[in-house]
Image 1 (cartoon, rainbow, N blue to C red):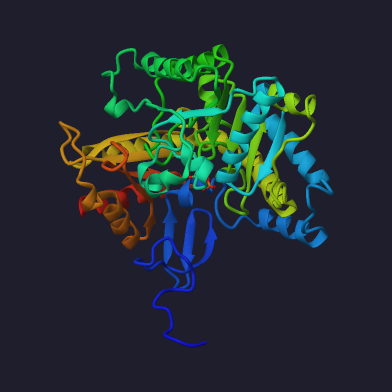
Image 2 (image 1 turned 60 degrees about the vertical axis):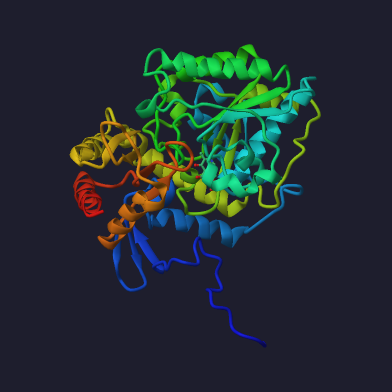
Length: 446
Ligand SMILES: Cc1ncc(COP(=O)(O)O)c(C=O)c1O
């Protein structure tokens, strides 16, 4: 080697300006760093972990699979485990996905890319090759790859890449705390936006994608009651597929198997990630309804798409073991914020933060919540983005050994601060109380 040594770490971290603790081990809702410090994981990393850290049966299943067969390529083999897991997922997704098919990926962004291409191929298969546009919503997040970024509406995460992407129309998303229509028949009005956008697309729209409960960008925003059923009806009327991006909300996070189940909505394609393997291995999945799967199976016969690590055996083993754990632990029911022990406790405790002068809104469902900060509670004026209020609260929390997930931009893509709270479903009511007490201190000290 010659020349000066680099001044930065060899690892491309999230920020070269920050130092990070070195992760060492995890158990339940707790994480430890290499210095022995313990952290309460109140955000499930980034709404990833649902079953708790350090569950032995998952690592055993993964190690067993790796010992028997670490990998086969999907152009040469399928595995019985992948077949069985696909069937288990269709069953978990409910009657609307009976007769469908599952495509496994290595994470959420890959799953979103897969869904976009599947929607396009579906339209080509049924003789609608003029349909290629994917409509989506502002203030959304669908992933980091360029296709996913194009349909996302998270300004901060896409601004510099915009010249590189092909964009289609984005419509507004309901956001009750700052409703454009003063909460008067707003579900219908926001759904009407989609109707108008699909008319403007003049027969070129292939699909509409949305997060049924807005995840990171808006922060755990649930839609008005009639919005999703109306959106589904509008998509059907325009012969456009409805894609529900449930990377953050799927596999129990909202207290139902999938968030769409809260509103009895049947999307044509469900996109999942994160909770499907609870972070034990990189995994995502696209769940296609029978109509979509059949268009390919009974049409050209092959999806023009593929990743080397499609249905990786170790990922599948992790996912199967996680789903088994979700079921045996009745974790989805526990996460429900109306009826479940954990979901109800989290809702109640987080609402107690409303009396703080900087807490403007507390919102969410199941085990996916957000606390939005404002400078003035009456006018709902956000803090200047330069202050990085959410980031500072998160820093104050981590100094007190509590992990939360800070996000900026919920108001207009730049301003607006919130924390995402998404603990594993194995958290106890007592741990929730402790976490909220620490969070209160962190907010008050900022
Ligand atoms: C709704 C949604 N879709 C897609 C993604 C991208 O998933 P990944 O980061 O696993 O690629 C995310 C990640 O946060 C997400 O929240």
